Image 1 (cartoon, rainbow, N blue to C red):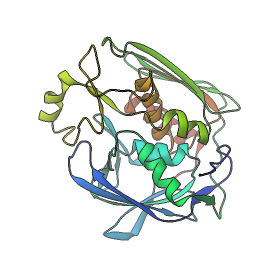
Image 2 (cartoon, helix red, strand yellow):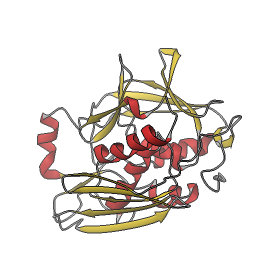
Image 3 (cartoon, helix red, strand yellow):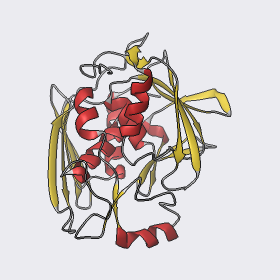
Length: 284
């Protein structure tokens, strides 16, 4: 059994190399991804067919895209990175090399659980160099997009609160809060799957999205009920919203802050991440 780091203070990397393959949620194409130990702080991306050019992830690569987080590397893009990054950051890893084949991270079962299991397969060890300094806020932050809001308030620990409010009876209003640690992430957040609505499927597919979606990698709601129960948690949707937020913040690292998000989105999350990077980090 993997013994997870106690918190997000010490540097950790993988003890070996692990590979996963699967379909991309939006492209519908098969893709593979390899995770390797690294001696450099941060998460670094290269392509399996061009391993010589490794790029350290930063908010400068973030691009707005529908229903996922996409990284732009100039000649190449990598979509739907949020579940993978949530697993790496949430499990306490700080030094990882990511090698990919394709334009999208495999969706696996729609949660971060498959990536956690991949990490468990090889284990974690202390990294050779320090992790980046954890961000300490000097003032509260507030960002909003229409009716969606995210705040970050200075705190000694990384605490998260998510609130969702859907008209569909199967979801409705949900709230979930957690003081995040790697162990809590693995048990309480990582298994939460992405979700969608039956009446949106044809429209999204016509727009070129969710080409690889299925009842095996997403919870689907028809309004009153779930088409593929049982849920892993009674409040699985709001936990998945926190999973997405954790993934989007993993690029800059988790701040010493209480972060509250109401009706979150990847665009709203990256507004916060970009501000933190520009004002508190030296990530290039």
